[in-house]
Structures are given as C-alpha cells and as structure tokens.
Length: 389
Ligand SMILES: *[C@@H]1O[C@H](CO)[C@@H](O)[C@H](O)[C@H]1NC(C)=O
Ligand SMILES: *[C@@H]1O[C@H](CO)[C@@H](O)[C@H](O)[C@H]1NC(C)=O
Ligand SMILES: *[C@@H]1O[C@H](CO)[C@@H](O)[C@H](O)[C@H]1NC(C)=O
Ligand SMILES: *[C@@H]1O[C@H](CO)[C@@H](O)[C@H](O)[C@H]1NC(C)=O
Image (cartoon, rainbow, N blue to C red; front, top):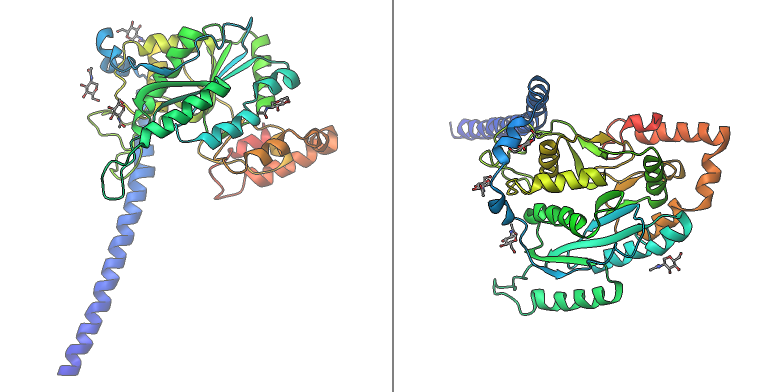
C-alpha cells in the first residue's frame, strides 16, 4: 500500500512534469505563433486590404502650438555655421549618439566619418554631426543619486566639442524612449542650418557606413536629379509589438491599428533634401508621443506622401559578413563598435577592387555572396536577393 502510494506519487510527479512541459512548450510556441505569424498575417492582409494610411494623418494631427512642445528644447551645444561655409553639401550625415559614447565618436571621426578623407579621397563634401540629448542621471548603488552623473559627462562633452566642433545637443534626456525627440531635432537642424544639403543620412553610432560606396551611390543619384528619395532597409506593414516585455512595446492607446506604415530601419537611411524638408513640415503638426523613432519617421513620411525604397545593402539589425565580395557592395552594416577600425581598413583596401573585378572576380563574388547570404537560418544580414543584385 505504502509502496504503491509512493509509486503513484512518483508517477504523478512525472505526469505533472510532463504536463507542465507540454503546456509551457505550447505557450512558448503560441507566443511565437502569435507574435510573429499571426500578427504578420494580420498586418500583411491589413496593409494589402486597406493599404492607405490616411487615418494616420488624421489621428496624429494636432494643432501647431501643441506640436511645438515636442520640439522646443534648448540647444546646449550647436554649430549653426557648420554648413554655411560650403558652396555645396552632398550629404549631411547625422549620427545618433549618446553622451557617454566618447569612444564611438572618436572611432567614427577617424574612419567613415572623417570629412577630410571624404573630401580628399572621394571628392565630396559631407558634413558629419553627432546629435545627442542630456546624460542620464546615474542612480547610486543604493538608489541614491550619485554626485556628478550628468555634470562630469557634460564637461567632457564641452571639451570634446571645443576640439572637434561637431556635437549638437538639446536638453532632453538621452534615452531610448526619447529617440523621437532626437529625430525631430535632426530634421529641424537640417531645416534651420543645412537646408541646401543634397541628401541627408541618419545613422546610429554603432553602424558602419561604407562611405566610398555611399558617396558613389549619392553622386549617381545626384546626377540623375533624384528627388523623393528615401532609401534603406524597408519594413513593410510591420505590426506593432504588443508584448509588454519588449523594448519596442507600443500600447494600443498609442497606436491602435494592426500595422505601421512602411518605414526604413532606423539604424541608417538616406533621404533627399526635398524629402527632409517635407518630413520637417509634416512633423510640425504631428503628435510625436510615439517613441519608436523610425516608425514615427514613417508616419511623418506618410503624412507628407513619401514612401521608402528598399536598398538590399542597407542592413537592418544585422551585421554583414566579413568578405571583400560583400565590401564591394556594402552600404551600411549594424553592430560595429570594437571592430570598426579593422573593418574600415579591410573595406577600403584597394585589394577589394582587385579581388572583385574582371570576369573571374565577378563570378567568384557571385558564388561567395550566394553562399554567404542565402544560407537557411542565417537571418539578420542582407537578404538573399542581395546576392543577385
Ligand atoms: C582624416 O583623414 C585625413 C586624410 O586622410 C588624415 O590626415 C587624418 O589624420 C584623418 N583624421 C583622423 C581623425 O583620423
Ligand atoms: C525625455 O526627455 C524629457 C525632457 O528632458 C524628460 O522629462 C523625460 O523624462 C524623458 N523621457 C524618457 C522616457 O526618458
Ligand atoms: C498625443 O497622443 C497621446 C497618445 O498616444 C496622448 O496621450 C496625448 O494627449 C496626445 N498629445 C496631444 C498634444 O494631443
Ligand atoms: C494630412 O493632413 C494635413 C492637415 O490636415 C493636410 O494638409 C495634408 O494634405 C494631409 N496629407 C495627406 C498625405 O493626406
């Protein structure tokens, strides 16, 4: 009896454990199913059935005076004359940085963001500006506010700016949920201080920009007289993230619909000067409380009647494979901090041209790109179709 009871209990434990396992597997899978497939199907059909975002314009439009509140931050550091000394600016490059990222800015200035190099080696005028907010106050170990948090960093920023003259800072707290304020800052600054720049690019400070390729691409676009240009990695009909744990969570009160208007991944994208101006004008009457900055850009653009174009060699979240055949085509790649010097050296090495040119080089690179970009389960970089571009 006693033994049976124990056996029964053990059996029950196993049963209970199995049930739990199955249930949790189901929950995990359901979550996956729910958050990716179902919402993608929903948003896809939504986008293709409705495919108009006029409602966005209506529901986000607020009176101009009220919209001012999102832009009326004071400049702590600024360089209004940055563009005015130039006859012609091909590209205004705004790098979204954060106060504490001194090292990243230093690395960018000496690699892809080196204006002198771009002028001498590529024959183009590119103006590089870092945009930031205020350093967050640091919480002390016991929840006390530690001394200095912002103060020390702010002094260092002033020194850095004195030396390089390329920081633009407003007095909002530099945080993920304030990225839309940073977006507004960029378009406002471009409108006020660099209105004649032919193109505007915005990039995160952990993005690698293949400047020679980008400049060549923009010089071509300029010769074609390109306008209405907005190019990057496009998210089409992406659904809002609705699970609360996510960094990208957006409550239904803020955005009730099943999909966002098309937008380009915020890591890096380019717009032509006319689009920058239209987006700025649209932003003057929009409610900017939606804190996902690239989605908000999509909303501004849809209000301005502009839609994005895909370029397969702009990366979204992912990092590009390290290979000469990739460097030959690469525009941007995301997630480079410690390897930026090495990558810059490798990507701009004359060897790249030698390897990739000629009939044999092209054939070789076609094979390499196919094998690097078209592997199953190898997401997060350029899409497979980039191998055929
Ligand atoms: C930028 O490039 C120029 C010309 O190639 C070079 O002389 C200069 O040292 C570079 N600047 C930095 C910060 O590396
Ligand atoms: C955004 O910046 C404003 C102004 O500094 C600040 O009051 C607010 O707390 C910040 N929001 C977030 C989410 O950090
Ligand atoms: C902007 O939208 C939010 C909801 O996302 C709302 O709470 C807020 O009141 C709106 N702001 C204005 C000025 O209408
Ligand atoms: C959006 O709304 C504003 C003001 O209501 C209007 O002037 C503008 O033309 C609208 N844009 C589009 C694309 O419908």
